[in-house]
Length: 232
Image 1 (cartoon, rainbow, N blue to C red):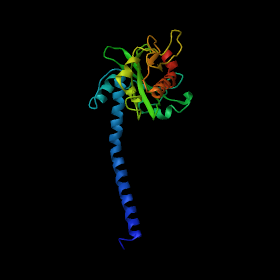
Image 2: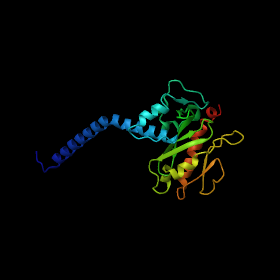
Image 3: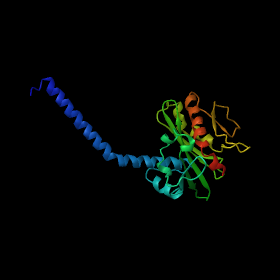
């Protein structure tokens, strides 16, 4: 075959594409168990961080078993446990697109060293450039925020990306989900300087308005589904 001809070039390119695609597919399949395990460990680290328990990739699984273990379950929007459902494997990205009546609401009970119980609720929403997510932990009164941690896929560095920093997360501690009348009020993210003295507001990020609003909407949407459980 003429190596300078178009037919040879076409066949050579086709073979190379097939070979490279096969190698990539093999590597992806081979590495998937490791990737899944790393994602699970990162998730456990985030859950633990929301209750202010420091962990590393090396000890996250052991600490998760110690503080949470089997004390994780799934609720429906009436606050009732869904039998046969596993909290850790719930895909929140899919669940938030469903109507409340069809949605699964995972929750994690964390038994602390002092004997108290914290309730960890996962949340997920939309930022400026992509998905945002996080975990909000509550005191055993099921009302007062004990800790909060947030993450994002591609928010603007120095602006919306600041939701992943302690500067933004720490002010959530001590905030309340219910007002004095017992009605669900969630936590609103407002303009910087407007949250002082308000148990249902935290300051947003200067220059990161859309991401801040996204966090507030995420909390309202996700936490409201737990209202009946938290009241009971």
